[in-house]
Amino acid sequence: MHILSELRYPSRWYTKLLTLILALVFFAVLATLAIAGFLVYRIVKPQRSAPEINMASFPGRPEVVDFQVPELGKREGWFFPGLRRAPTIVLCHGYESSRGELLTLVSALQDHQYNVFVFDFAAHGANAGVTTLGYREADELRKAVDVLAARDDLDPTRFGFWGYNLGAYAALREAEGDKRIRALVLDSVYDDPEQMVKIGVEHNGLGTFPLMVRSTQLSFGYLNNVHRHDPPLSSKLLALNGVATLFIQALDDPELAAITRQMYLQAPEPREQAIIAHGNFVSLSDQEKREYENRVVSFFLLRLPPTVARPQPLH
Image (cartoon, rainbow, N blue to C red):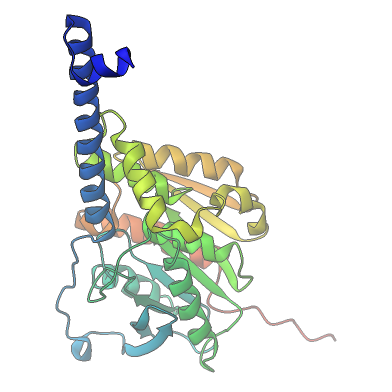
């Protein structure tokens, strides 16, 4: 009782010091949790970019394709037709990006007779909601593939994915359970959404604050509690056996580059890696974009050709 009384009404110097320390710790933890909550809100509600594009005048004869995602509502995508019965490449934009920023890559692929499809994930482009950094975005991607596979003007068994960070995670998560996916380009992919949360905290300049990263990850995990037991993607990489995969590492994003390289080393054959100086396709210079597009198109031409060689008749 004396100890409790002393803590409640400190009279000695050391109990006063202890009380002060406990108060400082309490307010520091409270401030950390408050800032972590704000950071999570900023991360899951990114600034949306939706450039105004008149698709009626855009080359390539794009077609608007709508599809429904349970609990998330309608999604609108743009389908760019290629050679009839050719495979389809689905482009998955990155975090804080949108489909409209990928149109030069769309044109590069369509010029080589591929069908190409682009759409915006939740909380990106014109879509409301919050991002789960890949968990539910993979569901959006699966619904898009299901709708496309029901068409009669493309090959429903041959799809390719290209994705950057958020889009790369969603693409890989979907590809690990979908045999229709035959080729993948994964640019700056991560293994677990919490890794992207950590990068988001660091980009806000708060990564060095004690417990800030972990508090933000815990808050993000609470929001996505239904996925708390989801394993990292690397645990299922063997499911890609036979799926050609190109891993792209950007040297100006060393944390994602290191994760991407580690996943490349764990992936089954056939696999390739490319190391580039600058990441984020939408921010590249015109020359860098052309080189990047050539690398991506060359990979798909080799690994997922637009036409399938027909067997020669027996003589």
